[in-house]
Image (tube, rainbow over all chains, first blue to last red; front, side, top):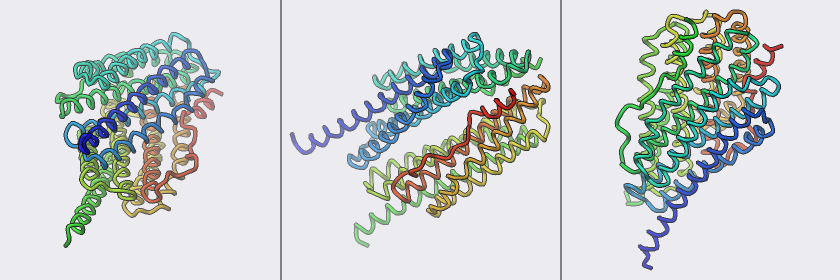
Length: 240
Length: 240
């Protein structure tokens, strides 16, 4: 092998390592999200505690990806599509770290709720949002691994559904809160949980945009399809 | 000037550009936060609209910093402290983009609240949090520009106060909500605004950690001082 072939091979290996690390981080984030909402549904504070502790693994991976990306750029001086791969890995690591953090926050609320748990039917809306979100996350990480542009675009368009379910969850919670002041406390917790999942959906959409950028070299041109996420529609309806 | 001196000079110039861009982004973020809460206090929906539009400038700067950082690493192959400077700029740009986004979300709620504004006394708690947050932000950006480790550490320790005020704001809002169901809608908006500002405080602390990392080459060793941010103390007290 010539020096040049050796260098090119080492660089490909760096890129593959980066890609693998991002995929691993994606898998961890998926697990944290699924388990945080399972802990909420099952009132499993022990599981919730494990989730808050496991968040450090996600943060650690983000730093490792950042270091690897920076060292690869410094050593290999990549151009064009390879540079986009590395920048893309950095961006994905950021969005996945945020998703992990939001899952940890849900877990913290589960621990704190302890004795004051909401009725199961109220949690179903949040579970529905989570199913949609996990589907988005799975698809977009798949799009990244396979460099599949159509999968990335389908995720980019799919965020509106999560926003719509979020609005209906808020509407339901508001009604409950207005019926009886004793419901207010746990309903607020559920609202924050729902908002966290809605934000995770935004990060999944960010990842879709990054995958598009890696493959096409430019951002998705159109304005992002976004439902109203201030929860105003739900709040306004409840006020009528 | 020799080739080597010329290269070193060009690199210093790159680092200075990066630092300047981060400081500019910091200034924009400060402005967005201050104006978002002013819009809330004054019920100024026109100002709120300008804030939501101005967020694109912050996002644009983040991408420019990212590009500049990556190109600088590729061209100059920096090591040690220079590499930390560049990584630090990337991390700061991320935290500042998040702060800008949270300010935009507050502005969106101002627009949506429109006719249903909370009484001024309820907004005072949020304004108090904002004063503390802006002080943190100003100090930490100063710490970055001057590479001042003691300022960075003071910000890192100062986050607990914002968390404490957040808890008391939640307590106050909960009481209001329980007194009269008609208060629930705008109180929820204020809760989300308060939570956004509390999260901005976390990002200011992240920036303090990054400044420490740039100067010292290692993270702040201790566990981060953190008040309970699930708002459980407030919610529990209200349930008694």
